[in-house]
Length: 91
Length: 324
Image 1 (tube, chains in turn red, green):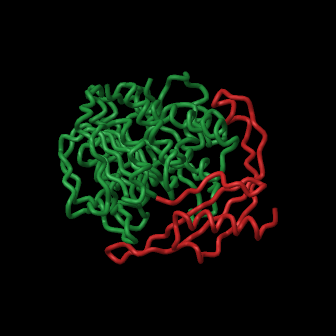
Image 2 (spheres, rainbow over the protein chains, first blue to last red; image 1 turned 180 degrees about the horizontal axis):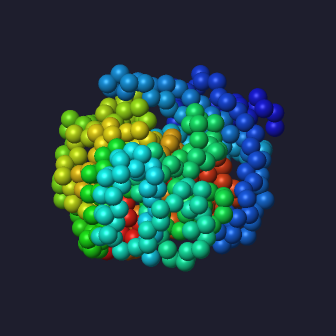
Image 3 (cartoon, chains in turn green, orange; image 1 turned 60 degrees about the vertical axis):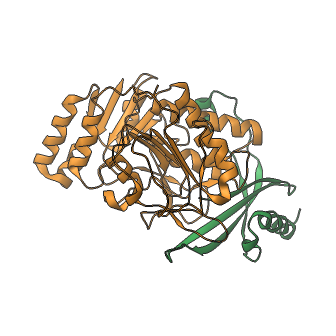
């Protein structure tokens, strides 16, 4: 799937929960999820191969009641085919 | 077996020779082995320790620095401060292998000594499950309920409408759960709802407490670097009597709605271990291992947020403590 299509999917997904982020230009990255074998060993499970995923990061400044700026971040994780895996937001 | 990790030189540099001696004397009341060491040598001590050993780091970042892990997300945090590295037998900090906690100092030696003395007393205290307090940003109430119900049947408060002006915390509260916004630049946590971000919790809201436990999902909830006690909700909780505080050193993440992932999931898994009667250090250790397995099972991989979650949650308090 093309980068622009992935971006569109991520914007649609984030807008469902964060309509205020619809106009935010996300940072879109293709990432490799490979993890060192030692972590699998520590967890007592067989090592899994890494996958290639897309992550779109949306950032927007919000203002608290006291007038203090805090940054809201929303991240959308998609698989290579553009399937939404997860939507996350900063605390 | 509790292992106390400290660096006498850094204590001396900060509080003088007398201060270092005063601190050393405080260790006399603690059952455990004392190691005067540096961050570079801790892994060796851990590698030579038994699997059921636990580690307690003395002091905040300026006395015994957090390990600075590479930030797996490009979210503005320069790196992720973690203690996982000091509880690992190798140089991969993602998953710890031993229970670990830290006693931050907030730049106040007397406060640090007071916390060391408190771990001398019996750590077993009954959890009065009716004495819990849960506060969530209104937008996350649905997700937060899933976490809070592990420890309580009480109503979870939401902000808004609740705010620093309306909440009242009972000094008899034993267990706290917070799912609020936080910042590394203020000493307040914030709610969210209807486009507003009210102040939900400030140090002034925290009364004198007993031997309580706090879990917070707030961004920077456990960020104490260069903070005095009154500059930090985490340090204020500890000063007011809280024995165990678990929170994030950096920007934390969670889902807008259930099922629980990231901070919601680590909180759920941690509370399940605590309710089972596990030691607090083991509860966080087990929660991290279960988190890793669950994400591999459900998702097939760990993304940057998942890795950051594993790194960023730290325990302030004695890892050998237990609430039964």
